[in-house]
Image (cartoon, rainbow, N blue to C red; front, side):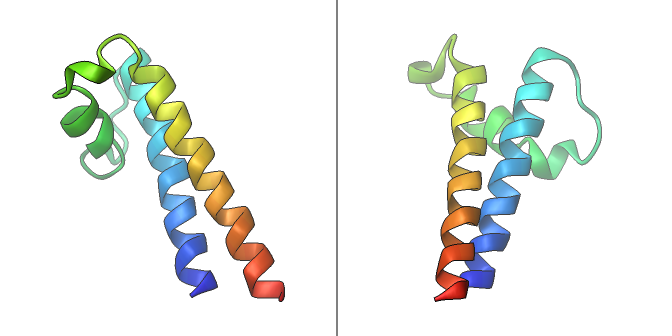
Length: 76
């Protein structure tokens, strides 16, 4: 379970960083996979209007938190 949490955290971190780059400048590398949240979720909801960069950075921070938690669970 710790490995799955670590993989999900890594993917969320990549998605958050990639979404931030995509929002600030076009980012063509694996855009269909890594920018799904930025292009499909954050752009559709008005609650995220104007704060897309912060939303993407929050996703990446949550990914880092998941990776740290999975590391601590794997040790114990």
